[in-house]
Image 1 (cartoon, one colour):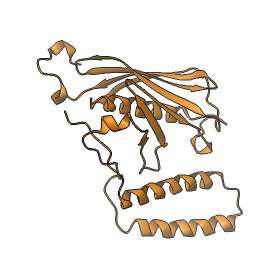
Image 2: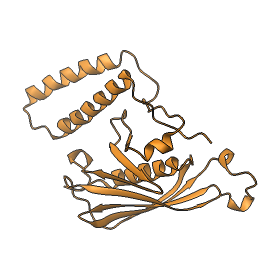
Image 3: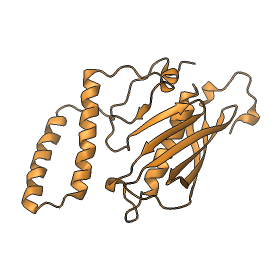
Length: 212
């Protein structure tokens, strides 16, 4: 089975990554600004012009990294940067070591749920991302079939967290993986995921009992 690889970014993709990073900084600034109304309206006018320029030519979907053969090997040599061209996603640099993946993140005001705490929905999303890429890096394209989370304690904003994932078992088309988020050395969230290979990727001779 061909396993994807990330090629060196083109000038266009490098420009897109820079634009998306600036957009994330803008989102944080827009959500936390304490300027007077006249300055806010001035910024709004500038943003409207930038939106007009960017909207001159659009794709139907978000830009995505291109993948090719050898991606799994590359993911073991350097961090994989998730969602570099999607400003809505929380950026993560994921390190994959065998059947284990990890990433470090400092949640900020833009990610707030309860006052001064990380939003639980964002934590679920990044656990799904890390576990999904871990499965993919094994040379096993699969989709999330189930993700169960247990919230043990709140996660404070502006303090680093670690996101970890481990593959626990593989049986036919089913891949099980556990994940967790820690802060201050203690687990705050635990997750258990089930990922499924597409039927066409199932090993030859697989019996019906291994199918969902």
